[in-house]
Length: 110
Image (cartoon, one colour):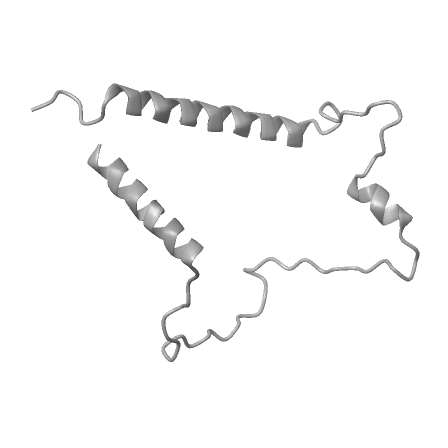
């Protein structure tokens, strides 16, 4: 019996992905914590932030949207799916699902 279940290259690829996701998460957290530090403004560049777009709207164009947390919202009636048949799939969707199935089988076999 082998000493390790995974091959060395598989572990290296997995660790690279984990480290990359960790670094990207830290970068996102830093951007949220210090938004002014990460703004990049070039001379002559057009600032297309959301606040600029909202300021350009006229008074009649501005709309207010109420944001309600799902836990505070009224419960909705669930849709009954028993009467629905199989979902139609295009050839592209079918090929992508078979590729995904093959990828999962390949990763579980390694």
